[in-house]
Each structure stands twice: as C-alpha cells, then as structure tokens.
Image (cartoon, rainbow, N blue to C red; front, top):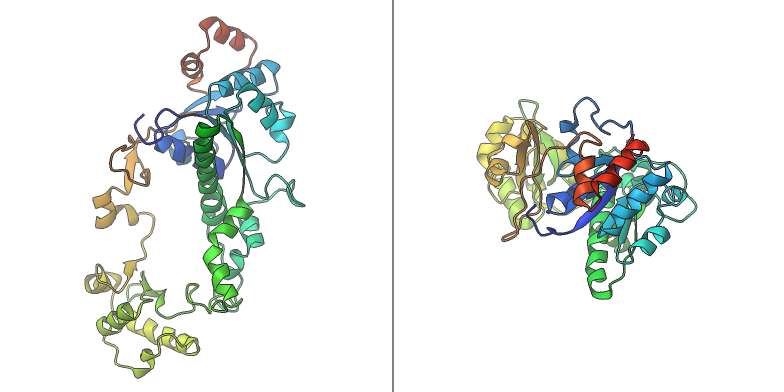
Length: 381
C-alpha cells in the first residue's frame, strides 16, 4: 500500500461515524488498518451491500468475540504488533472489556491509543448518549447556522462527526505517533467532538471577541447575512453561490450583474444588507444557473454553482482533479490531500465484516494451529 503512512499498522475497533472515517483516512494514506468487527454485525451503514459503506474502504476485517477471554487475548496480541488503535465507544467500555489503555500500553508501550467520543473522556456529560447535533450545539457552532428569526439549521453531520471528530482524531493520532518516534512511548489521545467543533469555531470566537460577530444568526458576514456572501435561486430553480468579500471581487460582481444602483456601493454597511439581498435575488432570477456559470464561473467574482450529489462528480473541475473516483462501481470522494511524491494507491472496496480473518491473523504472526484453535473456541463468531 503506497502513501505517506505506508508501514504503519493500525487497529480499528469498529464503531459508528467519526472513528471509521478516521481509520479510512489512515488507510487512504497507505497505513495497514485492520477492522475488528463484532460477530453477527453486518456492514454498519449498508448491511445489504458492503460496497456502499464507503468509510470502511481500504482495509480488511476480522470478527472477534470480545466477550470471550480468548477473543480479548487475540486483540491484545494484535495490538502488540500495532502502532496505534482507534476506538469510538463511550468512556469505560474498553476498560470493561479488559482492553483499556493501561492494559494495552502494558502490552505495547509504544502504542498510540486513539479515543473518539462526543463529550470526551471526562466531564459532567461524559457518559451521556449524544449525536453530532448535540455536540455542535454545546460548542456554539449550531446556534450560528440558520436564517434570522428561524431555528438553527442542521448542517448534516459534518462539523461534529467528521471535521471536529474523525479529522481531529486522525491529527491527534499522527501527532502522538510522531512523538512516539522520539520518546519510544505511546499515549492516549482523547478526541471529543465538542472540543473539535469548538476548535473549528476558533475564528468565529475571535470575531465575537472583537465585536464583529453578533449572536443573531443570519445577520453576519459569513452566515448568510451579507448579500455578497450568500446563495441565490436562478430562473430554472437551481442555485448559485457568491463569496465576493474583497472590494475588487465585489466590484466585479456588480459589474457582471449589470447593477448601477448606488445603494450597492455601501458594501460593508450591515444595515443595508437585507434590502440588497432582495435586490440581488431579483437579478439572479433573470438567468438560469447555466447562464450565470457562463458569465461568472472562473472569474474573480468568487462564484460556484450549487451542485447536487449527482452533479458534483461530473463538474469539469472535479473531473480534471479526479476529486471523485469509482470503486467497485460506487462513486465516492478520492483520498485527500495530494502528495507530490508518496501518492497513495486507489482504495480498495469495503469488505464484509469478518471476511479477512484468516489472512489478517496469518499476516500479523499467528500460527495456523493457533488460528484453528481460536476457531474451535468460537472466537470469530
């Protein structure tokens, strides 16, 4: 497996959402990642066809019954050969299974133990259930997303699960792996989606501190309050996006829109934004999205069409960069970012849970006799 993380061996204790996304990122970059599934589990996302569980791509799976002592010992032996482990259970679950950090680091002192939770490993809410929407709500991020006078808008599960969750965990684990090369010692990485969502809001908290961001959603520069940083409907019912923040980009927007209304000269006066949004909306409704693309796409207006899931992979820019690829007939985002020298291989399709058990154990140093004995004891379900 080519890529900048080639040679790293990582164990993923299979869970939901952010931890699999983190493990996918490691696999995309060339690390050897094995998934430890629970017996009887189908694919987490798409039980009818593992191909569609895209965040499970690029790695092999083994099912291990962690309720059996032999199952726990098998995991510990695998972790003895690993550089890192990632898990996404509630605090205390891995400890109750006999696979907590103390036990694992005793077996392998260099192990980096990545933990992904919503609320973190400690705090008043640490043991409560939750989902992305709850974690970004607590961080302040959810409050800021939406239109004036309306409830906050749910931004899918990008901010908590993936940006403030999986990516934060991946960054933390790589940091700890780099440190372990110097010190020879592993450590625990406590990645919480509440922390990550707050971190993603760093610039906004700066704006709030200097008084340039108020607490009313939909009235600020980057939340849809400004007429020059917004989305607009076109004549065909499709949408375009405008981000003409800088004065020179704004001047080009006004020019290409054919606007001569002097009210538009007061770009940065928020008092005029509501009426200018209505006027600009009237302008964009005069042409189709395709016509606006022909006029503005590729210019310094800071313009892009709002594409749906089917349109985005077909856009010429995305096709040129191969931003999307097809793996086993399933269109999906390609590994990112790009590297000039250690280019990752194309990821392999997700496999069904447990389908690679024998090969994993053999490759990680288990004797054939030991594998057969574990099978006889029902360790693999």
